[in-house]
Length: 533
Length: 42
Image: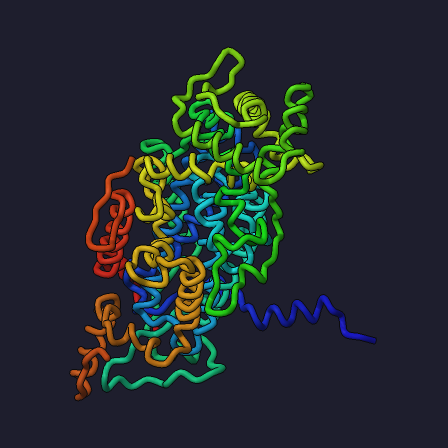
């Protein structure tokens, strides 16, 4: 009869995960720097992030935007994310400068580094899920990089529903699993020993060493893991409560087609005409929206963007003008549509050019019917069509139509309205708020708040003048550079030369100075040179 | 709206600079300050 599976699993878990290592009450005496606390503070930050995020998810966007208590929880979530990354980066610096991957701990570093990268993804999708202006701007800015490497349709940063799912389910699950794995690996292997001093006599690390063998001869001190993590969480919670109460959180209202059509009817109509004429930025963009080549990027002869295909097809004339107008029952509008459809392309282009020129001279005055007042000219049916479209937009109906038109289910994909808004209104407002790309916009936040400072390295490349990062293939060049740097970051324990940087930099001498002082004293007693390596 | 500091190609908002500056300061202080010393055991 086969052996009892439950018993087998229990025995294996008991051997692989000894409870005395998972919940230790002792630690090496050299663990005496506050730097060692940054890990516990990071876990505390993660706990507050998850807790405040669960409350936000329970009540939904309208609550965190429109209700005082909801906005306070939004502030808690915002500041807990800042606290989490603050201490995570400090923990990362500490582990780097201590060369914490030594003595068989390379995989512990790798798992921690991947957890850091997943955290960036979780925060990024969180910023995309705010459903305010900041999330709109981050979305339209980030889409080009995703599109340039051919994943813009698979991971659509303009699809609120998809990003929200990533943010509250997939990435947190991955994060918590990776963090848990990282902590278990740390506990099973124990804290790495300091770099040896010259002349120090100690057994070299050997693969398969038990923790007891590794710490043989090392003085130990009492330690309370649970108290450390609990106090770390309490410290972060107090900090976050104070910051949320004092500073609140950013929440600039989003742009809508309605708000733009009402505040700038000429601008709205000018963009709409370009969508109909096929001269807009999106009409000439390329994959994943169409087969144009205006924004197609490549890496030498290879275009990952083209290989990605047209996965989010958008026919700008149909999507933004002809489709919405087809829902209008007014006979005059339907007659205008028929006239436009019956005209040849040269005639249509002439009307669009004349109408655009006239819009350039318009002052935005509307007549009694709500149509723009323009100089007399040969515009064909366009004044009737765009008068109706402006009316639809100003009423708010166009915002809804772009979500549900073309037989779509009721859903949360804002790709179409955001791409329209990104033709002019979003960049104009982002520039006014100092969020444009030439101002490192992706890492900034609306108002006087810190933003995603952890994206500085990604944003940095776009600022290097006369480089591939500012040319027509800038996004794919940045993607390749970041992939390369990410590889180095994750696998630094295994890269000869680079993995010795911490030893050469010497910050570890400060962190372990008491240990080195004691080691020097010990080696003075037994003649030998005692200089930190 | 945030104010900026510019140094060559480096352009950073004051709030982001404050956060990064605090990180460096807290790390330096953390490296210097020792934890309370518990009784040693072999």
